[in-house]
Length: 313
Image (cartoon, rainbow, N blue to C red):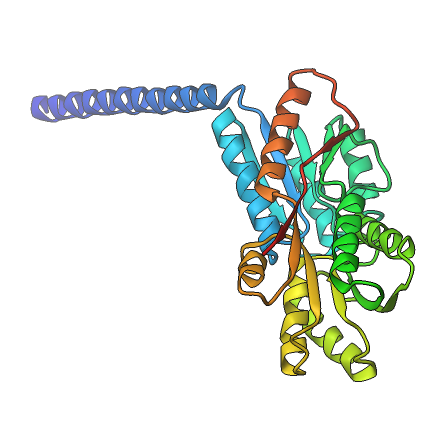
C-alpha cells in the first residue's frame, strides 16, 4: 500500500512539472510572436496595381518601384490586372482590405478605374496614378511622361523623315486608356500642322504585339500606299515590323513608344526608325518617392512629369 501511495505521489509530481514546462514553453512562443509583431509594427504598406505584366514596359516600371520601396523601407504588394478592368477593380478592393497605407495605380482603363479609386477615397487611402490617368475619384498626383508631347515628337520625326508629303498608318492603343488618347492626340496634332501629310488608316491593336502584327497585315491587304507607321507603343510597332517584313515593305518608317529593350535593339538594327523613351524604371522610382512624401504629410503637384527622349539610330 505504501509503495502504491509513493507511486501516485511521483506521478502527480511528474504531471505538475510537465504542466509547468508546457506553460513556460507557451509563454516563450507568445513572447516571440510579440517580438515579431513589434518588428513589423510601423512599416508602411504600399499597394501597386499594374495594368499588365505581359508588357516589358510595365515589368520595368514594377521593378523600379519595388527596388525603390525596398531601399526606403516600405512593404510593397504588386498585383497584375492582366489588362482586365474588372479584375483591377477587384485587386484594388483586396489591397484596401489588406490595409495598405497608399495605392499606386496604373489603370487598364481610365474610366473603369474610377470606382476603385473612390473606394480607396472612402477608406481614407491616398491614391497616386502612374503612366495612365484616371477619369474619376480623387488622386493626389499623377506621375507620367507627357504622352501628348511624346506623340507630337513621334509625328514630327516621321514628317521630317518623309520629306514633302506622305501617308501614315496609326496603330492605336487600348481604347479608353489615357495613354492611347494622349499619344494619338499629340501625333495627330503634328500631322494636321504639316501640309501634305495625312493619316491613311488607324486601328486599335490594344498595345499588344500579336495584335499589332494582325492589324498591320489587314491594313496592308487594304492599302499599301503609306510610307510610315506610328504605333502607340513598342509592342505594336514590333508586330507591325514583322508584318511589313513579310510583305516585303522594308522601306516603311516605323516609330514606336516606350523604348523597351526589344524596340531599342530594333532601332539599332535598322528595323525601326525610332522610339519615344519614357524611362519606366524612373517612373516607378518617382512613384515611390511621391508615395513617401504623401505618407510624410507633404503636398505634391497634381502632375509630376517624367523626362522623354527620342531614341533613333
